[in-house]
Length: 214
Image 1 (cartoon, rainbow, N blue to C red):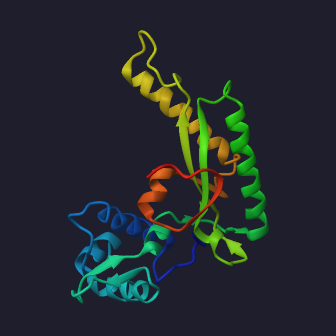
Image 2: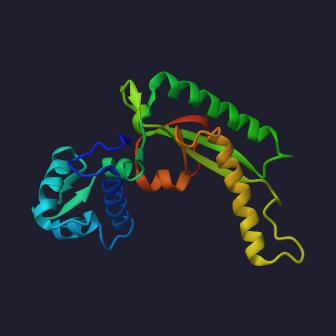
């Protein structure tokens, strides 16, 4: 999903709407708080209740939220909220360009796996999700979920290496593989950790490797 620069959605500026969606999505990560009311929504939106009500109603009509079962004044998020939480503000790309980029990402995954001398991780799985799975001719960006496995011994702490330096080195090695999958086009390709895709519970399509054990 993508939001066009300067074009409100549900009457809200893109950046504010994405921030609101991320807050509400985070609420659902804990069992203690899986639904919300208009007061909660207005705080996440950062607007008075009177201004928040029409926004909530528009999002409810669009399927971003549903009414909590048996509780008419409380709401729960749908999968569309997770997509909105990951949305980018960009002019978008054509489907033809997205298909070409996806082929290049899959090719890059094979290259990473073949170059253990340059990468400390191998790509075990790639999935595509978001607007790519629709029939829209114009997409926001290419959303990729990636599962990376560290090669044996690469993440071992070196003798005399400080803990913070060790952690930075491991994170840098993982980030290097993820950056390679973006093909130096971060405005067109979004690479998400596999765990993040699972938390969103969003539909996806396997395009490389095998799905990790759940």
